[in-house]
Amino acid sequence: MRIAIVGAGAMGSLFGAMLSSVSDVYLITLSEEHVQAIKKNGLVIEKTDGTSETYQMFATTDASEVEPDVDLAIIFTKSYSTEAAAKSAKPLLGRKGLAITLQNGLGNLEVIANIVGKERAIAGVTSHGATLVEPGHIRHAGEGPTYIGSISHLSQSLNRIAETFQAGGINVSVSENLDSLIWGKLIINVGINALAAILRVPNGVLGVTPECKKIMSNAVLEAETVARAFGIELPYANPLEAVKKVCENTAGNRASMLQDILKGAHTEVGAINRAIVKRGKVLGISTPYNVFLSEIIEALEATSEKRF
Image (cartoon, rainbow, N blue to C red; front, side):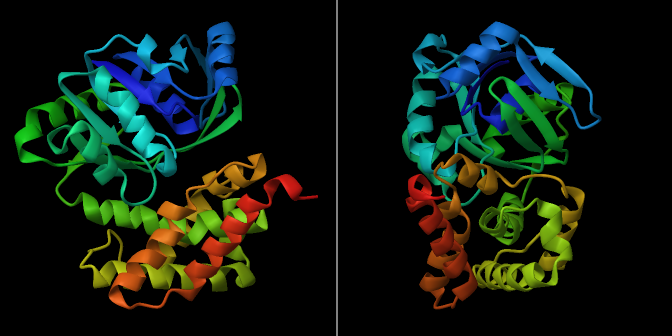
């Protein structure tokens, strides 16, 4: 397959490296530093077992440098850049090419579908984690399953994508109930991301500190209430225990929102905690903890240049 990774940050670069052994992969990122580091020294992936491997990859900041007719565009940008990413991906797609979102949060599929066409947009969710150590150097922070949503008229294409992912070492399944998995991951992010970013602590601290667990449990309960009111069947029986388990399994990891705050970058709070707030309002469900977490993150973003 010919695969374009649109948004080749930590996660996009990780998937690109893994897929490069079985496909022609093109990394597209806004970071000129990342591109130059890859061109000069290759893409270094620090694996979960502590070893490292260097991949020689095509990387660019200009999507027009990628020849059209790609089979798959994987959108891995932050949620607030989804529209721009989809516009970059559209002219690259071949006649039967598809665009897939593996991003965090809600609403990305709808944005992509509006641009590339509903019949060419698919969604997935992944449990892999990655951290950008420095330009050209990615740490694989955690492994887990990846799921792609089932669409009947695209079954042949989806099976080909799944086979390619599997061949590249990415454990993937085609799911009949992707909404459940997307909301399941969303609730994990609701419980971890904003709180870790505000407190500036690794994930593991949240699950073992009583003062943290109180805030986390209330934010998760609000998200669970909203999900069930929308008729979403979550992929786990106890959402809070699922969040705590992720905290334990990724104890040393810096949440993506924490990484953004430390860099003074825009975060995805709008597609995570703020998304719960907005959907709660539609149903008349109060979400004060998610309002609080959203407002603090938004205040941190607004004051990043003035902070001591």
